Amino acid sequence: MKRREFITGAAVAVTAALINPVKALSFPTVFPHGTTIYQPDKCFNGYTVFGTEVESEGTVLIDMNGNVVRQWKDICQAEHPPKLLKGGFLAGSKRPAPEKKGRVWADPDSTDLVVVDWDGKVLRNIPRAGMHHDYQFEGNPVGYHVPGMPLDNFKGNLLILSHKFTHNQFISDKELYDDYLVEVDANGKVIWDWTASEHFDEMEFPLEFKKTMYKFPTFSMTRTPGRKGGDWIHVNSASYLGPNKWWSEDKEKYAAFNPENIIISCRQTNTNFIIEKKTGKVVWQVGPEFYNDSVWKFGGKEYKRALSKLGQIIGQHHTHMIPKGVPGEGNILVYDNGGYAGYGARNPGAPVGWSDARRDYSRVIEFDPCTLKVVWEHSAKQMGLRNKYQFYSDYVSSAQRLPNGNTLITNGAVGQFQEVTPDHEIVWEYISPYYTQNGNYNLVYRAMRVPYDYAPQLKAPQEIKVTPPDNTTFRVQAG
Picture 1 (cartoon, rainbow, N blue to C red):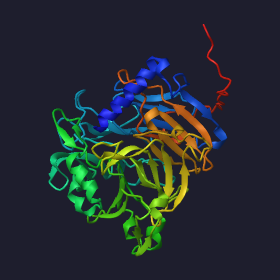
Picture 2 (picture 1 turned 30 degrees about the horizontal axis):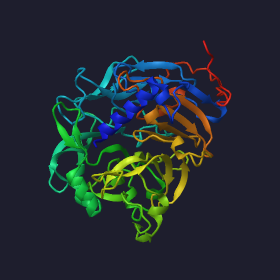
Picture 3 (picture 1 turned 90 degrees about the horizontal axis):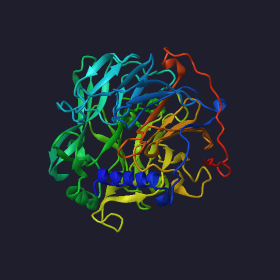
């Protein structure tokens, strides 16, 4: 089954539940939207920006009480992610025409990557960039707010995650919808690029894994009209490592953590890689296997059970090194979705071996990149919930480490944002009310928090505490 078919089927099931409550056997059909929890004294207060999946709604900026303070309806129209830059500027995809939705570099059917001012005027444009899932501006490695490295240098170099159509006989006999990283300078000139399939031989995949990939490379219709391709690896985030404690301590021992190097998350292969910027080679890999006999090697040492203790990562998103200047700096932060991904031997849950790894709950993990030791984990279990699926988004989603040590989590499949403390207390929660008309889902790929001063056009809003009702006594009034 193709990923899009799986997602569509899930959306249909949710739609049926919402239309006919009698069929909603496992999930509530009535629940509040907007800000549902807010403790101002425990939060990193500011604005939150996110793209909706509703083409007519585009990108929304809200305050802590869920009030919409600005909206750009023509930026990220079901594309993602938008980013609010300091000064009230917004970055994201813009369609040159309504039908231009493509995600292929330099293709005439692709979207542009733009920066607009508060009023929507385009200040920078990378035409036909076909950006998908991520991009980074020079001066900030991760694309979210970090003290000392504000997100405002949009005129400099720019790293873009896009696609190319390629062929590689060792991956599959089908055309590939390949992931393509490209860096452009201030004038839009390409100064560095990297194509995933060209480094396939540097990626460590088991033989059974490669055999299944060859037959079923996630082959499906792309956003380029009439073109199918194998989305074989599906990179969904790309960021620079940036300044970090490892590199500062020992540049030779921790050569893999050169600040210029790039870390990527590969959803369909259950792997995370660090790419050496200078050579383009893969110099660090976690996944796809996390068994007891899987051996992790780093810095000349072997850590025999490090991978199994870290635990199987499935279909993950937003893998990045926590930047210098916020708690946890130098560790790797990942939204480990669970759900379905990978390639391997067939089994009852994956009859052809495609997406053979499956798990019905999510977790956010922070781990040491040298030893793989888990430093922090957030999941239903850590929140004291009995059912692990109570924290679950099987696709999309993200995690942003905030300056106060909290983590802003996007449970994207259900349009839920939560700011949680290191002790797993939810101190802010918001449910997106932006539902698609056909699928009736409120998916959000990634939400990001910025300080109030990122938008000087606005007066800092009043912060009003929101205390949720006791669900056991809350009733919907008849009539």
